[in-house]
Image (tube, rainbow, N blue to C red; front, side, top):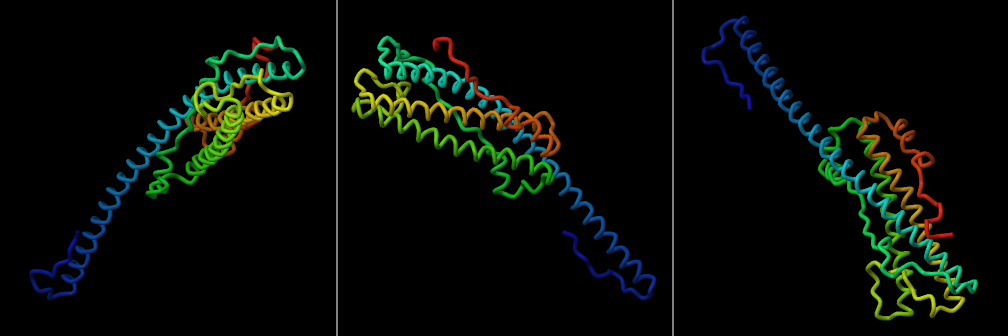
Length: 255
């Protein structure tokens, strides 16, 4: 810290007084300039580090999204086959085969994308180091993640509902694991078959919503990684009508 000291020699002229004042002022200007320079480079380092951390997280998220979309597509195909078998049974076609109880398509685990560096920056205030344009872009991604969290919560509620239905006929059944949706349709009444079909249909619908939200989130992450500059450009790249959707065509085993 710069400290002002009284002159060692007595100031006897106005000229000496102004020289002394000028020396102090110049010293203060230099000190402030040095302090601002150090702070500038410190903030610049913090900003670059934060951007690097967020980009690394977005890159991981795009990989997670791609994996989850593939898993959900397989699980949806399994559910379509299961629903077809239930529908056939409801119409008296006893020959319709159910998917195998250990069908690998239903053994899925999906993850929720993370924005940990961005959320930490909001908590500690370092998010203010970014430009308002960058903050708006990251806010868009954060908003999509919040929507994903809601859809995921509904997804687990739907799984719990079909798991509860299954336990009505198998009290030893677990509400977790790969066969949580599989029920022995041979013991179901027509009304129970209709209820089971409805639960399966709701789960299929939920997967389609998850697929859409994941695709939009992934498209936004990729847009930032590819250098998108503003929200309008991001909207064009991540428009729900253009990012694609789950394949609704019948699976190879479904006719």
